[in-house]
Amino acid sequence: MVVEMSFSKNMELSLIPSLPDDVAIDIVARVPRSHYPTLSLVSKSFRNLIASPKLYKTRSQLGITQHRVYAVLRNRNTGDFSFYILHQRLNSYNRLVHVRTLPHMSSRGSYVPVGSKVYAFNNLSAVSFDCISHRAQRVPDIPQRMCYKEVNVIGKKVYVIGDAFCHYVGENGWSKGWQKAVTVFDTETQSWEPKLVNKDMSVGLGPFWSDSVVMEGKIYLKGYRNGDSFVYGPRERKWESMDEVMNSKEWEGSCVIEDVLYYHDRSGKALRAYDPKENSWSVVNGLEEFLAVETARSRWSLTVNYGPKKLALFFPKKRDGEKLICCAEIALERHQGGEIWGKVQWCHIVIGDGLFDMVKVVAVTV
Image (cartoon, rainbow, N blue to C red; front, side, top):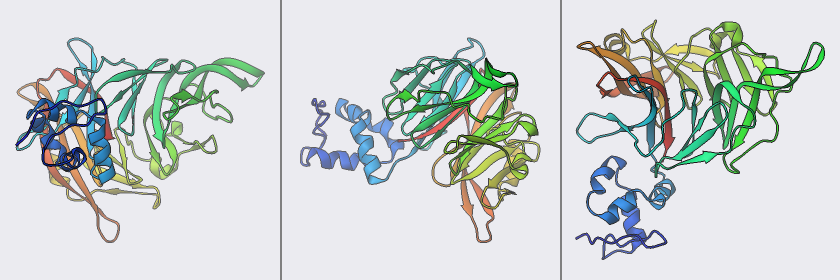
């Protein structure tokens, strides 16, 4: 029998009268997260527990964290940029659901997950939100206005790379103007490092990047032109040209899982993988028929790390003249000999009213 009681000030409750509170929370923490929406309907006490950071701390301590996927969608009618969460439903289709407690985002926003939070950086301002409570808070403004940004995280630090108006050494000595620069935000201290990092930069104003990822502690930035692709080493604070093999593919909309880069090659109708240790590309086997049927006419696609050895692939489809957004969960497995195989776990229409464009997708661990 469940007795309804509210949280005390220290966020403890009596859910099961015959058991201590900590044991009750331990039991709920072991329940699959997909059951939480139903469990929150039992009573106010359960609803408060589902929203409590203590529950997710217990889950983390037990090693049963799960990935949540968030998407930034643009409403074509209103022009608003809003966050949606991929809501997993039991015995039903998964859907992207609007997170109404979060504010609208900027059209120039760049997004990155850090722990159980998502950080959004505009040209100057920044905001973060907690993925448990869905409460947003301001982050200190970027020290100098940054445009055409790529944002990545290494450890607890966020690296914002883009164009900044700053002083630099030119042909005629010191000059000022727009220059490629890197600035770093420490999420533990919630502060920016005091100076823009632009020392020894060989990249000037001009290159725009189509995507960027982190592998083996370095930031890889893919340019729209092959000559504009670079690697930035935060430890050395130096740039270098991207390896020709990695740069040979147009890996826009990519993700990294266990230091291997994956992206959906729409022209080749394949899911491709780049292993930096082997310095080689390969095709993920077992997906040929699925990709040929489901993504044959996709004009864009995005992949995101969906947990250990899994990714989520988002892509558009048309049905009865309406533009839909689909998502497929793909499990990955490396066989002997190094071959990577994929298996589709499910594929659902996650937005079906044709009103939205997908801007960005991020995954967090809770």
